[in-house]
Image 1 (cartoon, rainbow, N blue to C red):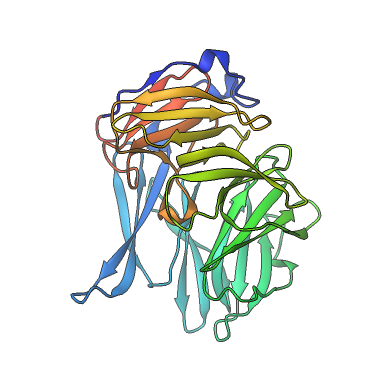
Image 2: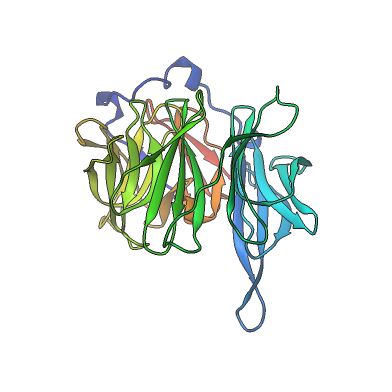
Amino acid sequence: MLGLAVVATATVAIGRGHGAAAASAPSPASLGWYGISDILDRSGTVTGLLLDVGSLDGRSVKAITLAPDGWATGPFDGRVLYPVPSSAGTALHAIDARTGVDNVVVTRPGALRQATYLGQTLLFLEADRTTGALDGLWRLAPSDVAPVRMTTGWREAGVGPGLWTFVPGSDSRTLAVEFCGFDRCAIRLLDIATGTFELLPTGDVGDVVGIAPDGQVIAYAACHGSMPCDVLSIDRRGKSRVLARDVAQVWMSPTDGALIVERAYTSPEYVLDLVDLASGARVEFSRASSADAVLHPSAPRAGWGADVPPGWLIVGPNGPPTAASGKMVRLAGGATLQIGATQ
């Protein structure tokens, strides 16, 4: 397991949200994880995807076979969303990763490209099953009798097939909707209160990491899958600046915007820095003895994720946080909590 030594957190202003409310350590059994892996035939062709869900006390609760173009996202308080297509449309399922209880939350006539929960409100992106043209972003709140279209569809010119991701902002009112094609990404920002969209006029950028409390969009530079990579801060006019250079992994707290990066070129050590969003100054946060540790959850393309309690982050060996996967580290003070089969 990781031998973490927190060295500098006492001198760092972490930000709001890491006080008494975040002090008590949650039980790993109350936190969910998911991971997606390819199902291959003998020729190496992908015939489907395997969705595994479980809890951070080391239990693998359920395995589900998805279509080759399937996806999953979450967890949202333990719930993992995934689509199940049929001849009649698409049913969006929410499975509780801790218990295996699986429910259909909405059924739609089109194909669902991505979905997320913002509190108890479900947002999903729907497309025509035949043409692939987007039908718009839809909302289903507890007070809604039926799904409500928040915006009509749009087309991404010249990018072809790609990946849609939703990244909620730490400002509690903004959702980044990102489409990454083969050679570029397009980022739209949804104001949840008004339902209005704006296209962020960015240059060449990669995956969105998060949205800071002041509205700055934090994203990878366009490294096209190669690491290490720079991390950018982008304002609403599309002007970007390098916030952190040559990082191996990035994690941003969805509750208060605390930004943690993994240093590159430090093997066999594993060093995490806390980054000041205004100045880009980096202070060492923790150091591990293992070279194969990563932050959880990683980039949207990683194919796995975990519940991260407010005020904590998760570190462990590369891959989904299954049994014996590492530790939770408290941002304020650096206390650690073992997760996995050792509980």
